[in-house]
Every structure is written in C-alpha cells, then in structure tokens.
Amino acid sequence: MIVPTMRTWVEDEIVTPQDLNEQIRDAIGFLLNPPHFEAINEANQTFLASSATTVEFPTVLEDTDGIWDTVTNVATIVTPGIYEFGYVMHMNASGSLSGSMRATINVPTDVSPSGEVRQEIYMSTESNGRFSHIVRGIGRFGPGQTLEPKYYQNSGSSVDSNSTLTPANIWARWIAA
Amino acid sequence: MIVPTHKTWTDTEVVTAQDLNTELRDAFLFFHSQPYVYAEATTTQNAPADTLVRVNFDTMSGNDDMWIASEPDIFTVNTPGVYMMGITGVFHGGYDPARIRLQIASENYAGGVAGDLAGSETSPNSGAYGSHGCSASRLLALDAGTRIYFTFRPYGDQVNMQTQNGVSTTAYMFRIGDYPA
Image (cartoon, rainbow over all chains, first blue to last red; front, side):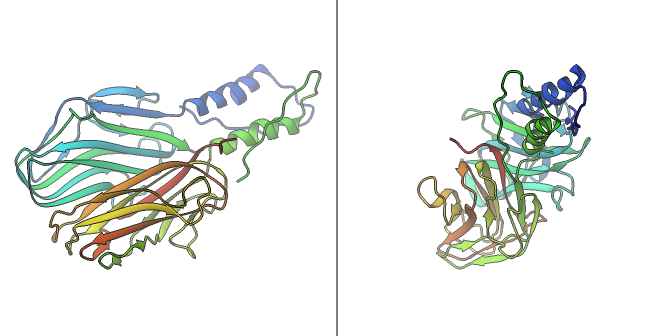
C-alpha cells in the first residue's frame, strides 16, 4: 500500500475528481484498512532441544499487504510505518525440560538493538507441564524489513506447541506513519 | 497533539481552502501519526524480596512527549483517547523468587479504579541460573494527564530486571481511537 500524502489547498483552486479521490477516498480507505496480517498454526509443532527453530504459521487469515510468506515463515513489511506485532504460542512439555525456552521474533537492529524481541521462560526441570509464550512489541519498519518468529529450547526433551487450547498465531499491523 | 473536530457542512456553503486544510489534511495527518511511545529499560534494576519497584526506562522512540528522561518511570497521556499499552519484562535468574508479578498501573486513572490496571505473574521454577520473562497488556480510555507506570515485585527472594542476551524490558503505548463520548 502507499501511505497517502496530504496536500495543502489554496484559495480559488479548482477541486478536481482526482483530488477528491486521492485526498478523501484513498486516504480514508487507507485508515479504515491499514496494512495488517494474521496467520495461525492449527497443528502442533515440535521444537527440538538446543536449536533455534523457525515457528511455522501456514494458514493466513488476513493479509492486506502481502506481508506473510507461508513458505519461509517470514513477514516482510511492504508499507513503511510503526507496526505493532507479536505471536502467541501455548506449549506442552511431554518430557523433562530444562534451561531457557525462548520465544523470539527476530527484527532489524534499528527496531531493537539486540535484533530480537523475546519472551523467555527458564525451567530447572519441568515434566509434563504446560506454559504459554506471548511475545509483543512495536517498532518502526521500512519496506523490505522482516520479522522472523523463532523458538529456542535450551536442553532436555523436545517441546510441542499445543494447538488444542487455541492455535498459535502471529500478527502485525500498521499503527502510524 | 490536538484531536481534530469536524464541522457539519451546509447547503450552498462555499468550501474554502481553509476548510479543506482543517477538515481533510490536518485530520488525516493526525490519524496517520497518532501518539505512541516505545521505551526500553536497559539498566539493571533490583527489587528486594516482596518489594514493589517501578520500572525506569532509559531509551525511547515516539511522539507527543509521552516519555521524558526526567521522569523515567512515567508515560504521560497528553492527547486523550483509547490507548493500547503493554510491557514485556526480562528478569535475571541469579536469584530464586517463588514468583514475579509484573503490573501496569496509574497514579491518577480517572476511568475506574485507580492503581493497578493489568498484570501477570510468572513462576521461575527454581530458576536460579536462568532468565525469565512475562508480559501484560491492556486497552483503556485515558484522559489527558493520565500517568501510567509499570512495576515488578518478586516474592520470597530478590530479582533483577536486566538485559539478558541483548534483550531488555520493553513497554509501549499507542492511541487507537477517540475518547468515548
């Protein structure tokens, strides 16, 4: 999408249909439906220990700007601006877990100096437990900059996302220029 | 920022350039650049056991002067409206609290019960050697002048809020609509 550019009107100007279409129709249309996407995963995904794994969201519910790629599982911003973003995933520990469980969104370093927005849980030992990750943030993105959901489990057995409670979901939406 | 007000047009009225600039240009510019703030707490802050501590932020991006360095623990609403707000806390596991509570609160919220607005808790599970995070969020209609702050409180042992593996505690607010009539 193109963020509308608003002009300054002058006295005695003839207002054309093109003016009204750009300055009213297109501008209001943009604000009523700014760029956003949501994708979900209705299946369980297994994350192995000691490796950073791409979190998969294969089903797109909304995508007004061609942001989400279901093959690479990467969101690529098309329209520049401030975006709110995040993902939610419920987990099911079927074995014994230990160490850090890191739900992360990799973002450009000018959005977060570390290049990550993360919600982390540490467990000394956990067996057959359930827990949830909620990762959220906002930041300024330019065209072509990306958000990549990753999951890292430090050690122990593998852990599964648990879609029976609610599907894992990822989203981003434009909130300001 | 000034929230735009809109006139009611009348028959045979001559539309002036000022009308269009006020009713169209300025209104759109407001709605496509609404107030927001995003702040990070990169400096380590310690909370003793069973003690509530406010989060001090040290870096920010945003507009509308919602965060200023002289009040590092406060987000101030300067433009009334409905706001989305949230925090993700990052805690160091060098200690062993039974749980940590993270909260969003206000000094003067006028829309209901003042004080705590939202919160969540996490149990580090004997996490003496790891880090831990949790988050809270809330959507609220807020008057101009509303002062929002964020707190954390460990139970049973102290805890540090600090940057872990380059990731810091972050909080944000952004306006999404007009204050209800």
